[in-house]
Amino acid sequence: MERREVWSADSRTSARKAASVSQPIDTLRRQDRFAKWAPHYENGEALSRLLCDLQACAAAGLHLAADDRLLDVGCGTGAAVRAASAMVRLAVGLDSSPAMIQQAEALADVSPRAVFIVADAQELPFPPAAFSVVLCTTALRHFTDATSAVTEMLRVLTPAGRMVVGDFQVGPGKLRRRWWGNPPPATALPNWTGLRQAISGTGGSVTEVIRYGTALGPYVIVSAVKPKIQLQR
Ligand SMILES: C[S@@+](CC[C@H](N)C(=O)[O-])C[C@H]1O[C@@H](n2cnc3c(N)ncnc32)[C@H](O)[C@@H]1O
Image 1 (cartoon, rainbow, N blue to C red):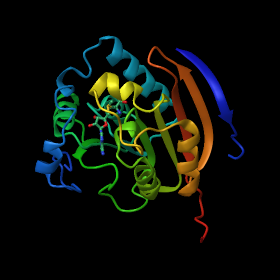
Image 2 (cartoon, rainbow, N blue to C red):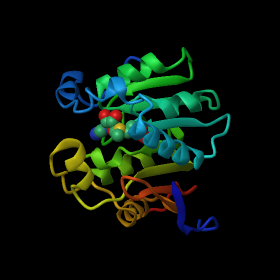
Image 3 (cartoon, rainbow, N blue to C red):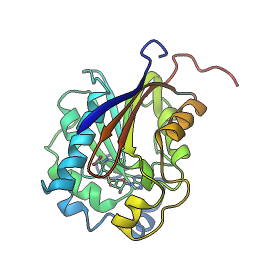
Image 4 (cartoon, rainbow, N blue to C red):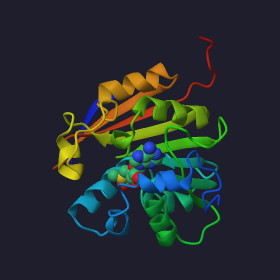
């Protein structure tokens, strides 16, 4: 993958068993477009390897520390949660697909620090400031309201918490047609400018934007921090 720094400004810088869900499990199951993908999501083939590499690049931007509490939003089969659980105090994977979460649980080592939850990214079932780091990779494009999801991620972050969001930057519908045969909802598809605006508009501060060239088009990773002090608007 070709890495290109787009923007950087350091100085400007079970629960395991779905204890808390924002929608009834039956509703989420009916909407589970990812169920067929879950069993072979980590099958080691080209797409699987690409998504895994991109997720690892994004997760590296979190600079995890031993006392971190990580939330991975749209965690899929939980590779990032598994990797992080050895390093951090708590690693939570959240996904709206019961099949993805089932596979994540099957793949996870028995670790009290790795937890998987079925819930919707747009209504995170956590109190404010529950996590010191939030990750979201290759999932934002699937959310019906990406801005709400970003707002929720910032809400559950502690002051000075870090967030890394990564997704493909393609014209509306291109990837979606290839993968799903449908045009995407208008609000689902991020571009890095729109994502930066969504983060800034909800109180976050973007610290870095990196673009990778991939066989499926540019992949953009946006890093941000939540301000230490929330200003009254
Ligand atoms: C392409 S997979 C990405 C998985 C993983 N983050 C990665 O980087 O490999 C997209 C994931 O987003 C999840 N997803 C889609 N809409 C969601 C929503 N509204 N809330 C939570 N997860 C969602 C899907 O179930 C799927 O597991």
